[in-house]
Length: 234
Image 1: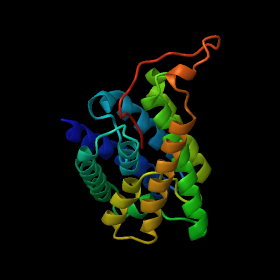
Image 2: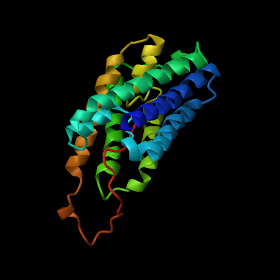
Image 3: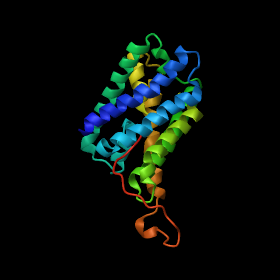
């Protein structure tokens, strides 16, 4: 059940997030950068709201690995989750290839800047994403009820920042599936390594800076929320 939800959630995410750039290419900029960012951000939001209570809506191997490394998620479930995510991404990408062929190249993540710049950008935006995800998923003082909106907005913001430069992937399977379907593996390693390192750093830094229960100042108002275990992402 959890793996099925993770597969379907990743399929929807990759289909939507990749379709935006493809439509943009096919129809001469109809989507624009804001449209591309909205496709990914809105997809993340609706998937978290619909499947977060089933699988946690990871949708991203970097998130799954980071949560396991920080003991928010069992390592024994990591291979199954990653397999579901990779499978969902590849299936969505071949579905897009069938629907939009020959315009799949528009959805392939490629940098327009140097390799080093793309690597740093992907590291930073994934750091941002996992900092937010770790807050809403693991900290009882974060606004967990609005997790879908918070994470979706972070994805949209990151794409607005990095989309024209690195592609704004933040997720190895966002790049892997379209690369397989298009047969274009140019600089694929950036989008496998940088998001994973950025995710580990973002999740780790939030874990370090968050207040423990015995450190809360009772005189300071805090928005309370319920705990969401292992939830959310891109």
